[in-house]
Length: 186
Image (cartoon, helix red, strand yellow):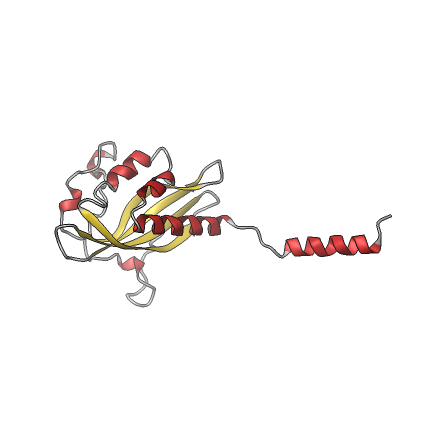
């Protein structure tokens, strides 16, 4: 028969373990996304590419090929994440940038679809522009159903997304009225 002292020690150690919550998937996603934003901010695209789903890595690399060349990234910040299930999420990243031959400051919000793979690792699966100035990333031609290479001239255009230079849905509710959800669309 176990001693009272042994039972109390077991109960206290079990209680101490119960007080430490397990790291939930949303927290892991948030930490991974924030780490990648920091890596990209400092030009460490090797770290970023390692966290892109291998099936999407080539397209992601093509879309960002002007970064550090014709495009200078001035600042990036993590704009939040929303879980879409246990294995899918959307992350918003806000980027301040300029073309290397200009002094005009531009801002673009990127919407990234993240997936959790079988090895329990979160990775970027898809990225699109949510608002702001066009030209930060090269996007595939929608007329060709995304089966062709990205438009190589996209980064030299100087136009904003239709309607405004920022997606109003990225603004807090009340400031510009209730907008659509910046995390929707995937």
